[in-house]
Length: 199
Image (cartoon, rainbow, N blue to C red):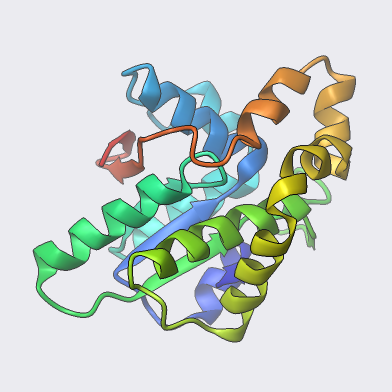
């Protein structure tokens, strides 16, 4: 587990990359896939989060299978990873990349820690561990344990977070609350030929 495009580059190559940008990239893509709408690179979902979209594009360039994950679909992502591993018939490296928040619209800008992405990454790691994919880095363990300890407070933490407050102030509280609903979605969006579709 690491943070942002730079974190993806720091990690050893993985066969699967899970991009976690809870507010709003991952949640927007998940909602679109739930509605049966494939999401292409020019769609609104790509524009709502430069960082989440940037991580996804960088991950796709490595040849990895790229999934969009978060609190809302952690178990579905874990199940998709298991199916991919079974289909490969071999050990499968999984990188969980928390997007964080860029401090400006410049793609090279530094990241701001985003608690929603820490918790979302932890939810994905926890779901992977629950189905037996559990050889974790210290960073993944820390994210997982923070999610486990704070699971009951996730909704409050997201609505009170810096990113959450920005969205609440824009009358988008319902989107924040939906993003905080752990395992409410049964879809795992995968990036194929430049578009997000159901895995």
